[in-house]
Image (cartoon, rainbow, N blue to C red; front, side):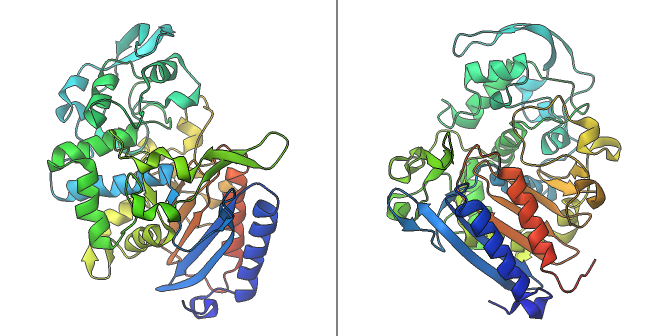
Length: 418
């Protein structure tokens, strides 16, 4: 690990980062444990841990802890898709139905109510889409799809009834595509932004266009070449001692178990390999993924993407250059980002106007997080990437801790490239 001062960071200020995050979030009972790494200008400049990976068993957070990264799976799926774009197997402006024929006649919800009976959709009045859904609509969450946990519309209620995106969906990704072909969209593609199962659909497209299962594509084309040895859709028995338990807030304060590592379903291979949220990983593995992106698509001589493709992750691909505040559908109960000053690129949020975010940052930095409060961002102009790991679901502190993390990291800078 390099000395922070050699890459334009202050050791003293990084100590402040560690103290604030530990005192406020771990000692304050909001998070079970934390692990933060900062990589800048070709060197690992900071690596710190605090708290526990398993409170019940008294296990301190360890360097090689395996964690549920949930929606931090999405940027990995986005990279897999762009690998196939570079090979000419699919294009961002392709109509989705050219790859999923059963989606040719998708329609948009107008009125009606979902069924309360499991695995039935309900009665809906629908209208034709203004235009066909494109692959870029999946990439940017402007597809008209949704998540059942948004608790926002009759359409996401139908998702809940049909258990859309259940990791044990019969038929896996193909079964999920068949389910979605029978449900209306929330809105016409390209007209609004809504967090959704779009990235899971991208995983299916990777599977179909590559001729491999999605998991096999990730393993052979991405994880093994990059040396990401612990990233997968399940945790093998030999590694279960490194698997962290996951927690959630307890009424009145503190944490209670949400997914016990010793009894977790992640010990089993899922039927549905979710490109939107199904992977487990480690700090070392995810940092290698981020370093590859920070390096313009290449890490340790292994090229995954071209530099030009990686630069697209720093661009706002929303139609007309709109920000999320301009295009977001009626707010649901969940997102992995604040909306102000932010656009959307390829499976990631992208900072367009740091002044509007009210947080230090750089135009073109791209980022996302996971439901268990994990987070990462990549700032190409500052030659910087930060990965943060923890394991707490459903905490109101999620967005606040990411604000604090960004503020404290950028406050540690003594030199700027931007």
